[in-house]
Length: 454
Image (cartoon, rainbow, N blue to C red; front, side, top):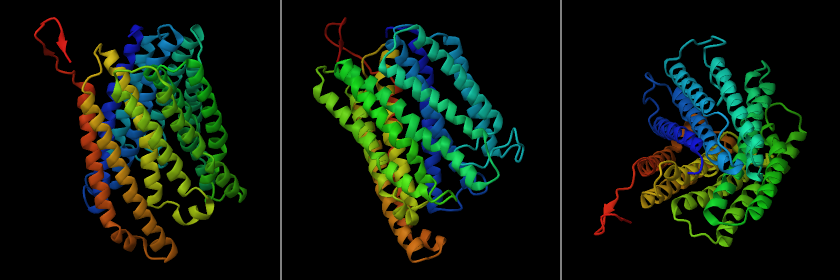
């Protein structure tokens, strides 16, 4: 570790991993409700479980991004973080806000209160006071990392990362605007949700992936930076107008059907470019880096993001198809693999690379870590396939044949059971991962007592 303030990242990574466990537990409970609808219905209704599952996903991914920034920016800028105290204050604000959200959701506190009660918008259910806290934390973060970069060396990686992080914070401001007209509400709601995950988050993903490729493969920085700028241009070109695929059926003008179809079809390209980038960098690389697990997660991130966000997104993005498939389990299939591939694998890749460095150890428990990758990824892929089949059957029975929603749901029970058990596999893989990252490798003393055995 070259810079002392990189240790800030360890606190962010640790909290993120804890929330990741909570998110998957919530997902398992939600999955079980699909096969046993009355499970926990009095104690914790489905809508509360789902809020915890989705909100904890967003928060732990953001904490991973913040931690990654605090880890890589000192190396790229060649100077310490501007204010470690502000970085820890930011983390405290986010943790307090997260606890406030959980208590508000679980106990349904302050219902109807404009400031303290939860809001009824998916992914943006946080009470107003928590949203204000998020903005304050984001401003602290942006000031801290921007000052660090401005006073230090500027690179393509830090430029793109800062662009993505500033965009993330500014777009969140639309979460405060909640018009009474439902069509307008959804239009501005997608300015946060879509332009995050299919816009600025892609910039963050590309910059962190570029940093990992630089460290793990030894390819020249000029080559990495050229790829990075091409990927960013493609992501912004397709992602911004690609928002139109959410405006098909919410009362917007008809031209969005064509704009959305054309530009969201092009969203496959940046994800393919990212996959090609990762594999070409490894192929060209001269470095036999000891951290094979981090390289595996990096390649897995690029590959599964292409299939989850790119291919599965394209499957139902054309308005002629979306007319039938909109809001079915096909959407859930796309969402699960896209988030897992693009952002979950990315965060785990940077955790796997950085945590041994931050804890002053060689890469440890690599076999366990790589086993966790294959378990979690195979579980998520199987879940995606089962949800895709479920969505196809649902689309035909419900949207084409016109059968009742609940009658169709009964026919999908076998798929929901398979989805639940694939979730159990993901959870087992997660426990292996947390153990591999959290527990130090046991060093066996060889005959020469001064030399630890490999």
